Length: 341
Image 1 (cartoon, helix red, strand yellow):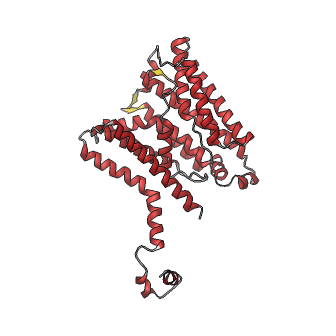
Image 2 (image 1 turned 120 degrees about the horizontal axis):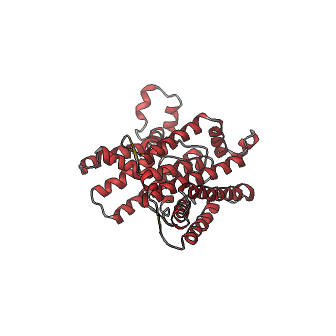
């Protein structure tokens, strides 16, 4: 039968095509590729329809804005991880950096009487130091980025605990909370911020030389280097970018919580990685589209919101998140395997 399929595919008479099994290799390939490309979007649509019927509150404009508002921190951080993975790198210290940012802002403002501007500037400096160290260890020392950033995760978390003395630090002035929770034309400011970050990333990746170099460096670093691309500098840029977006996430987190805590970002790594992998970003580098990451972010946001509205208990929600993460990892592995053929 395999020989017959090959003969038919290589130009056998047209009338003999009916002998090819429906579930032939080309058919399976097209179906699998279609599911990998559009499966997550179909799941988002299916969840949207289901929760619209399961809860009378889901489809309201206010609730949909709440979905985007709740997902905005994950969405912003996911942009940095998407670009890092396209470049062939990964930063697992982003959650810890979010926590450290909240601690620096809270202790700076509430404990030391600094203005928010100065406290945020200190957080930016700390993030840039972390990004520079990550870049140096990856580029100059040659350590794998996963190992480097896992180690940095522990260092940054410990630094946050030391600065906060193991405590949660409430903000003395809640003006930051008012800014973070503000709305423009009814749309939360953080949702607008997330949209701007995605637009900037889309333009940067698809319309600029920097974006093309990021894809080239992730796809084949040696060839990119021979073509004159400064691959090491691109890697350093990527780690500075993920650190900088972590500060943005930390500012938003501190404003929402009206406090700072070293562990505030401890669950973000899983959420961000799940969204990015669901969005189809290749683990091998050199591939991926930022708009697909946004679809992954929306899937997680819709699922979390919908499960709360239909009164699913918290441990089942955690189980659902875990299952989605496993599915995302499997999908990423399948994509990588198929791309390597």
